Length: 391
Image (cartoon, rainbow, N blue to C red; front, side, top):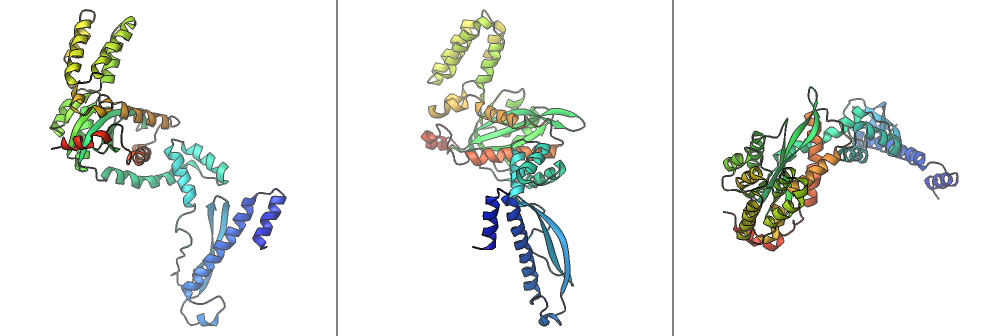
């Protein structure tokens, strides 16, 4: 039985903390490894006469602390007289283990505040990090932001969903700003967040800039855009992707209808409107829409007039039946936006745009990694048909 095993058994018998034993032995091992590194670099052992005329020699040590999950290691890093030795046992400027940094970043991705992370790390690992130190660690995600924004996208997407959500951001003052998001589905059913744009408010110009960005990333053809009907967006889509079809979110329209009829009529109005998107063919849907307009025109003439002027209500019928339930509304992207809001619940605000982007990209990458190889419902049954629809 070696000394290490003996100490562990003794600590267990006395119900003492094993971390102290692990820390002390790890500290001893790392210090010995540092000494071995210098010996190999110089080419001779301490006190060896062979080193007298080599032109370089040992020149003392400097102290350095290194935090691990077992506690802080107090290390003595050896130096050479010529200053040529650079140890490789420890990262040059890293005072934390990779595992601990990854823990910090994962907590940050989940929307935990820097103060809360600092408190959790102290409780979990016994290491005290200030909120500023935590912020410095999470800045490592900045490289991911640039890579995400510049990555190459697929040339073709069957459908692209556009929707914006609002998150709190500090500039001179704190206000909620619009996060324009685009999620695309390929013909094989895999989907991903294409990119995003942050702006004070949602606007057609904001969407134009995002669309131009994804074009610069390689997107050439989109069969269908699904949107909530923001004023001016139709024109922007026609400008950037003139051959793409457009579908207005029928769920949004149904909500607007409900808000503009009496409570006593809502159930019946909703049931009548649902018959439109539940139709089996476009011709049947057109008849159901005409019936709806005719039935309610006397009670709600302004509402019916506005609905009759809407365009792109039934475009989704131009696509295979197996995917229609996914493309008549923006529910898919709205679900992701709700996830973003839940993830930011504990953040009163983002201190700057860079911090908001770091948070966003970690969430977007997590979504993409989860869905990149999953086939969205209904797409497997009609992949060949969808691919034939591209030019």
